[in-house]
Length: 164
Image 1 (cartoon, rainbow, N blue to C red):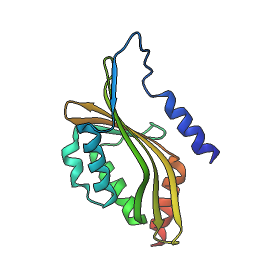
Image 2: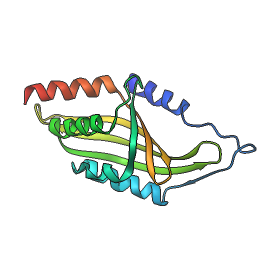
Image 3: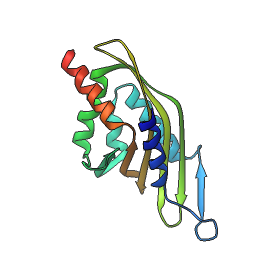
Image 4: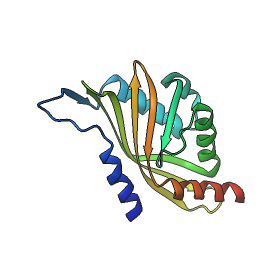
């Protein structure tokens, strides 16, 4: 738990810092981009990955937790298929989605949630605090940054898939 808290604390350091006197920013929870991300996440939870074709631009990069190995869309599709192979009843609990438009940094959509699923091998519930940042270029996402305990999640997925 301490590790997860540390990851979330570090994640807040990467959010663009805004000084009111220097930069104009507007934030909304009810804008078009927040709604699109919410719909996209609902599709992910349901195991319907076709929504990724509409929301992500060609050449999108996914950076998860340690940022050492950016994914492309093919790797992302493989990874999220693995999530659904390893877990059932996937949910994003207490999800909050907001979009901020920064004069200097562009448009970013932020997601805070608790990722939850039932391990298919053990039947145990698995939860993980998750923060995602989507960087927009026009009407599509150019980059996804996800902050979570990557080692714990990856180990659980790999162990589960080896057992089922």
